[in-house]
Image 1 (spheres, helix red, strand yellow):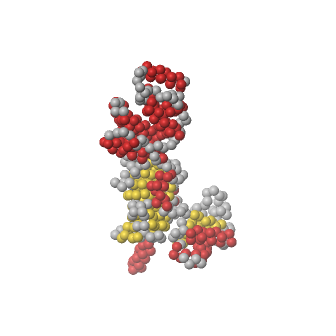
Image 2 (cartoon, rainbow over the protein chains, first blue to last red; image 1 turned 90 degrees about the vertical axis):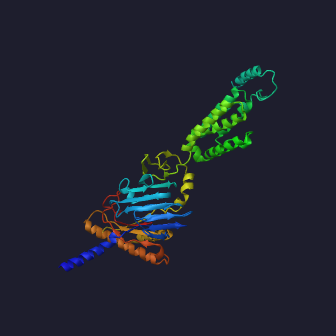
Image 3 (cartoon, each protein chain N blue to C red; image 1 turned 135 degrees about the horizontal axis):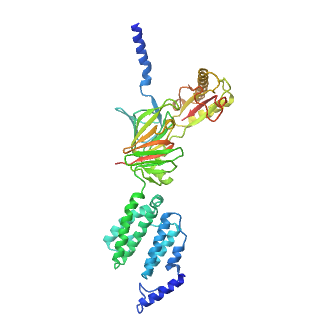
Length: 147
Length: 351
C-alpha cells in the first residue's frame, strides 16, 4: 500500500511538473535588427515566432525593434536600444486573478493592454527606474531616457 | 486718430530736433504709412495660438517704446515683426551675424539664437512654450536691437536679463519630457506613481513626465518621431470570429464554415498567428452539461480549423492553434438575454 502511495505521489509530482515549469506567456510576432531574449544564463535571438516566458529580458540594439503578443491579448513592442524585463505574469482565464509587471529599463515601449488590465486597477504595470506606471487601458507609449 | 497722434509726434519731433539734418531722429517722409503705424499693427487680428498672439503684443509694445524715442527705424522694425506674428508665420529669431556686432557678442548670440530657434521653429516647442516662449523671443529681438545702439546700455541689460530669466523657464517647459508617457486611446489611460509625483493621464494624447509627474502637451508628429519604430512593430489587435449554434447542438452549418474560412485567412495574413478557440453555451440546462457542450463545440470548430489550415502548405509553420477550450455558461454575452442563440457560440480569436 505504501509502495502504491509512493508511486501515486511520484506520478502526482510528474503530472504537476508542466504546471510548475514556466508556461509560455506570449511570443514574438515581429523582430527587426538585433534583438535578444535573455533567459537565465542564455541569450537567444528573438526571432519571429519565438516563445516568451516570465522573467525573460528583451533587448534591442541600434535601429532594432520587436513586437510581442501575450496570452491575455496584451501587446507590447519596443523601439531601438530598449530593455524590457517580463518580471511577473499570471493569467489563466478571463475574469480570474491576474497580473503583469513589465520593467522598462531603457528605450521606448508601445503597449496595448489586454485582459489582465481589465481584472482590477493596476493589475498591469510598467515599472521604470523612478516610477510605476499603472495601466488602466488601453494604448500608450513610454520612453525611459538614458541616464 | 492715428494720424492725429502722428501729427503730434511730428510737432514734438520738430521742436526737439529743430535745426538738425535728416538723421536717425528725423521724422520719415511718409508718416501715414503702415510701416510706422503701431496702432494699425496692434489692431491686426491675433492668432489663437498664445505664442503668436503673445509675440504680437510684445512687438507692438517694443514698437511703441521705439516710437516714444523717435527711433523710426526700430519702430518700423518691430511693426514689421508684429505684422508677421499676426499672420501666424513662425519666424526664427534674428540672426546675429546679420547685425553689426563685435565678434564676441555675435558668438554668444549665435548660441542663444540657435537654442531659441529650436523651440520657435518646432510646432511642439511653440505649443508647450506658449506665451513664455513669446516673451523670450521678443526679449531676444529687443536685446539684439538695442545692442546695435550701444548708447542704450540700461535697455540692453534689461532685455538681456529678461531673456535669460525667461529662457530658464522655456528650457523647463518647451522640450518634450525625457521620461515620457503618452496615452494613445480611450479606455482609462495610465496612472503615474513616483517618488516625486503622481498623475493620471486619461485622454488620448494626454502626456506627462514619468520622472516628476508633470503634464505636458505633445503632438501626434512628435509621438511618431519618438516612438515610430516601436509603433511600427506593434502587433495588430486581435480579431474575434464568432460562430453560432442551434440549441443543444455542436453541428456546423455553411455560415459557420464561411466564418472559419475567414478566420483562417486572417490567421494566414499575420506573422506567426495564434488561433485561440473557445466554446460557450447559453444559460438554460445543467452547468456540467453546458460545459461539456461548449467543449464539444470548440473541438468541432478546432477540427475544422486544423483541416482548413492543412490545405495551406505554409500554415503549419506559421499558425498555432491552441487547445480548444470550453467555458460553458461562464462567459455569457452581457448584452443579450440568457436564453439567446448568441450565447451558443464558439469564438475564434486570431492574434
